[in-house]
Image (cartoon, rainbow, N blue to C red; front, side, top):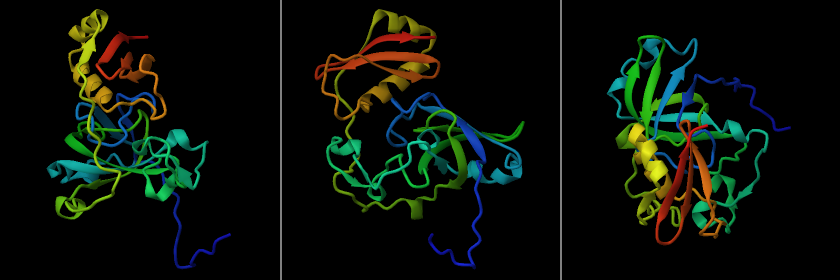
Length: 235
């Protein structure tokens, strides 16, 4: 057992709130924040952290950091090596050199846009550009401070911002009918699919995939020529 300095008081942590997002499962959720600006979310703080005084002044921030837990990965544990999707899923890197969701303490960090704060009943933060799965526990909120949090000349070769897919997106007749009733859903689907949520090792261009967005199941395929939204189903 590692020796802990007697002067350090270790404290267990607990969620300050839970987030509601369009992403009902890991597959389809953006791999980084900000890649799907239309992905809106609501963070509801829990007692005793839902005191309006706790967010006083935060409304002046355009963006906030969320410290959260990869709660869906707790049972699977962690490994020292991982295969980042950005490197094609073939090259292994150390877990601390990646944004792998399988980490020793299952902790994550995400910067998102703060759209508004509702304190009429408790505290709710309305956010966008989210990359978290619905129900993710949040452990802390910190203001994004541009002069210290943005480092223009920072670099990490091989981990540059990915270019979105450029193929045209076609919606089937059935999908278009659903979008007539749910017009805001179209932008979210396009942003998510342009980031190519398919596993890096999948090469079958005719395979039909399904992702859960909001209360809908989106069936799609991606080929070199087009992104086809085949159906938008509601359970």
